[in-house]
Length: 385
Image (cartoon, rainbow, N blue to C red; front, side):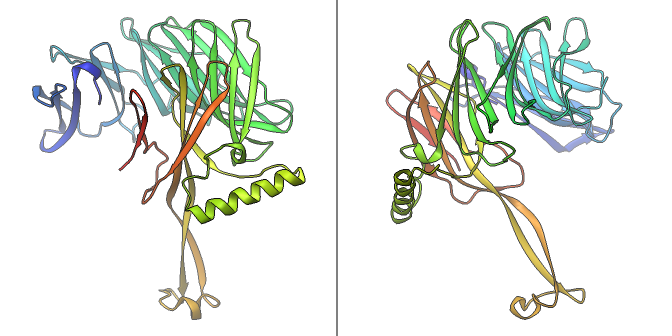
């Protein structure tokens, strides 16, 4: 876990040191030269797993849960990176929530997830030891999109997707103060027959917000392009849509001949006045401030399925012969990542530039970010292993 100027926080469980039903979690803290500053062991009950973490003001917060139990408390360990002292908080499980988000907002912890398949946000107050359910999320046909913390302002921003009266999907921006008071609830309304699928959030100043993400046709699960939304101090919205085919370098990750064929196809469609239709699943990253611009990175992927043929209870080693007679069973083989895109846009939500690069040899059963972003003085480095 990055501790910024304080170095690195490393944690692992040591099965060899387990005793009396407890498991040892080894904590190691390194400085920025990767030299050991201190280490210690922390004992927790054997069935607890590390589910989330966050770094805030020289402290690392670790969330441990017992997945198979609905009655045991969550545990939050607050570890001071400077002194090595730690404090353990037992958080009562008032609801059986499937957790997807964990963030620290000043003296509170934010839990996001689903209860009865409906999005739910809980806020735990460390000093009082109480948990509050934040309003505005427990809705049918909605989902959590992003949970964003502004440490300087002490504001929690939650992006959620909700189905509108017109039966398309929009993004709702809900903001709370540290005490749980709602201070904003804004719905970004897309064009007719357009749905907003995924989004990320950034605040330019105290009154102006930018939201960037993917959009699709109404009731269509694949994205057709990128949208950029600008919300000013008067809550006036400006939405701009960029079809993937309109981006300059969206297909530059391809081999030269293939890219040329795609570009020629795009030109023919434009000449005929037809709409461009390129369908992608895109995993969107957090927005990064870079000099006078803002950077959005997304990773394209698709679900991969393999098939196995069986005949008479035996695996089919002769697929050409038995596939017509036996039974074909397809199974999910993970998400195959194809390429990453990076776009830069200005404070008004105007697209400035875009680029892409190929991703090879990555298949994952979980959708997660593989590409890391390193903004440097004169360039932006995208990296994966």
